[in-house]
Image (tube, rainbow, N blue to C red; front, top):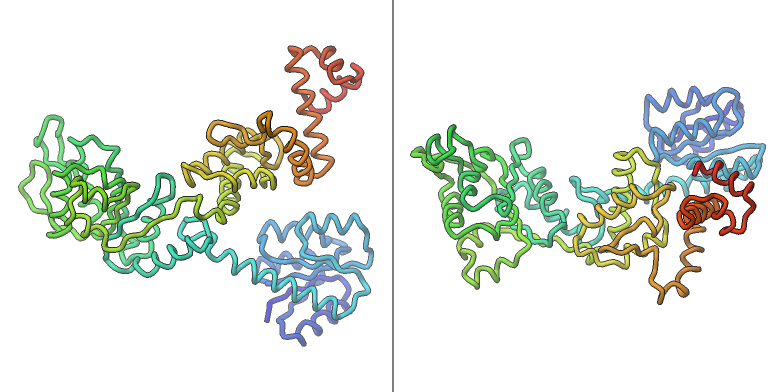
Length: 454
C-alpha cells in the first residue's frame, strides 16, 4: 500500500483516480491544482504523485520541477490529453517516471503506477548501504564490514584495522565509535608516524610543567582526552619499542603517568588502531611486541583496496562529483561512460584517496557538465589521449561514446570550441591564420569566436 497524491483540475478525473487507486489498496489524496499540491507536499510524505500537465495556475511540468527540488526519490507520473513529443521530452528531462496520454486504459495506468512504486522500492533497497556512517560503497566486501562494525561497535573490544594507504581506515574507526556505547564521548585520532619520536610519549600521555625544556604548562595527552571514549592510533606499526611498552601498560592496567608527572591517571579508553603494515611479520621480525599485538587485535578488520571492490567506483565518483561541483560552484553532474570505463580499468594504487583526487581535478579542469576522459589524470598520464600505437584503434570509438554521452548538439559545440582554441594556439592567436588552418572564411571564424566567447 502506498500514499499517492493525485493532482488534476478536473473534478471527475480526480474522483475517478481516487476511487481506482483506493480500490487497489492505496491511500489516495487529491489536489485540484499544482499550488494545492505543493502545499500538501510541505505537510506530508507521498510515495507517488500522479499529475495532469495542463493546469491553470502551476502546470504539471512546473510542479514536477518543484517536487524534484524537494525530493528526487519521489516518482511522478504525468497525464495529459494534449500529448506532444515536446511535452514528453520535457517531462522525462525534468525527471518524470512516465508519461501517459488520455484517454488511457485502466490497466495501463495501474501498470505504470505499480512499476513506478516498484522502481522506487528497488532504488531504496539498493541505496540503503550506499552510505554507511560516512563510508561510501555497497559492494559485498563493504557490506560485510558494515555488518561487522554494527556487531563489534557496542562492545569494548580493541580493534586493529588493516588496509593500504588511502582505503579509509579512519572512516571505519569513526564508524566503530559511532556504533559504540561511548558514541556521545570523544573520538581522538593521532597519526603515530607524523609525530617525532621524542614527542610521541608527550602526545599520548601528556606531560607535567617543567618536565623538559619547553614544557612551560601541563599538557593533557591523547588518552586523557579520550577518557570514556575512543582513541584512534593510526600507523601504529611506527611506534618505538619504548612507547610500545608504555602503551601495553595502559591497555593492561588502564592507568598511566604523564611525562615528568607523579600522579597516576586512571582511564577507560577503547583503542582502535590501524596499520598498512603486516604486524604479524613485524612481530616475527622482533620489531613489534607480540603481547601488545594480541591486546590491540582483539578484532582485526581488513579493508579491501579499491581494486578489489571496483563495483563501488561509480558510487564514489558520483559522491565526489557532487562534493566538488558544489565546492567549486560548477555544474559537472556526471561522468561519461568512456571516462568511467577508464577508471574501472585502473588499479588505483592510492585507493579511494587517489580516486577522490582524480575526480576533484577532473571537476576543476572540465568546462562542460560532464567529466570526459581528457579531464582525467591517472598516474601522470591523460587516459583520454591514447598514445600513437592506440590512437587509430581507439579514437573513433572514444568519439562515438563521448557523443552519445553529451548528445550530438553539445558534442559538436564542444568539438568546435576545442578546434578553434587549438587553431588559435598553433597560430599564436592570429585569427586570420587560424581561420585558414580550419579552412573557414575569416567572417565565419570571427562569428564562432564571438559566439563561444573565445
